[in-house]
Amino acid sequence: MLQNLPPLAPFRPRLLQDIKNYSAERLARDMGAGATVGIVALPLAMAFAIASGLKPEAGLWTAIIAGFIISALGGTSVQIGGPAGAFIVIVYGIVERYGVANLLIATASAGVLLFLMGLFRLGTLVRYVPVSVVIGFTNGIAVLIALSQIRDLLGLDIAHMPADFFNQIATIAQHIGSLNLYALGLGAACVLGLFVWPRLWAVDSQFRQKLDQLDTVSALRATARLPAPVVALVTLSLLSWFMQFPVETIGTRFNGIPQGLPAFELPNFSWETVRLLVTPTLTIALLGAIESLLCARVADQLGEHAKHDPNQELMAQGVANLVVPFFGGMPATGTIARTVTNIRAGATSPVAGMVHALTLVAIVLLGAPLAAHIPLAVLAGVLLFVAWNMGEWREFAHLRKFTLHYRLMLLATFFVTIVFDLTVAVELGLVMACVLFVRRQGSIFKAEQIATGSQPGLTYRLYGSLFFGAVAKIDPLVTQIEQSPMGTHVVLDATQLISLDTTGLDALTQLHKAVHKRGGHLSMVGLNPQPKSLLERSGFAQQLHTCE
Image (cartoon, rainbow, N blue to C red; front, side, top):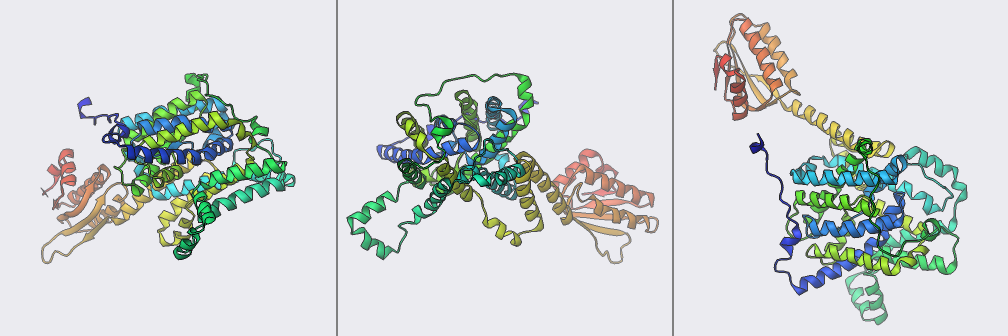
């Protein structure tokens, strides 16, 4: 029996392939791309951790450790791993319900599941998640991320934000009177700057050539290449510090960021706790697998490198999520925004992702005290921008172009993600996808009576797949045969019958009994390989008058 099982996936990191024929030119490109992505990841890592109910250093060390491991062991050449916006809602809910210690256990357990998924070649199964379900829960997560940032954006005096949608809205409404206009101004300036900065010098080509002749303008154009989140973080933090704005900062809420390496700590582990954390573990593993492989597919479309290995990528994600909790980290996965930045910056191999992690290490060790002055309203602005870019909002406008099934799955997943829970939303989306698929395939099957000329008997032609979702269409045939004259022979033309399952076989058995009861014979002609094989293995073929 074990010999019939498919072989396990080999552990073969893409790094080993990419460093063959590695050159100094590629190293220079990877180092430049890695440094760029490391700077971009700095504000995002802190913002994701704070929004998840954790300290900012949890996000930073997740970006460093998981980012290095995912690049070194992963199945893609240019993917950047680390904390992701999609995990904010999940992690915040787990922290609220189970505590930080149990989040670490759930993350490590999810890492084991991810590794096993890759080892047993389950990476390709993630592609079976319908795109409508992915868009639905992604847009729902984006809405929840935006809602979670309202407190810091408005500077509201809320000691503790609940995790569920309606209570968050009620809490914000109750404390709207504590609005801090300074925080709102910083947050609004951050969002505006993030939209405007990349387009600041996107002018007509002829006018651009004239501007480039001016040294001052050329210098400004050079600075326009700096990542917008970094520009917003530095400029608005300096403004807030210089003007002494009365706003909450990383220093006032978290006492800054420790300047040093994280300590290795083992969380309190017990199998009883693991059993309680089955749902959070499955949620982290499922979302991590979907996000990382979606990100890898995006990278394949943008770059000229070799296509990703989904199983190796899942194994690398598993190792990263298993290791990170022991250093106080949070769940990690592939990140689309940082991966795209890496590709556009010229990355050629996983070395760029490893340099990105080392860049973050240098920034944390050298500049950690400066992070205390970063206003939380600015980080909220960064996350609002992330939420906007994360959602595929145009899909709502295009819904009228698609079928009712597509619209129903997308909207149901979207609203359930917001109101209830991501796990429930994905489960509901997959169940709906299965039910609607069965309904659609069942509607394709047809059993039509065809004229036989002067020959006696009844002849029917079968089209499509006769399975459990289509067997009701055999019932009219049974009724017609029961009302036919005695001795009526029936022929089923199965030339267009694609497949047959055991429920369909049972329907044919009932049809055969009805024919036999009337003293006739049932024949099947034109059988394709799959239906014919099932009929022969079940012994039903021997009961027919002819079966060919």
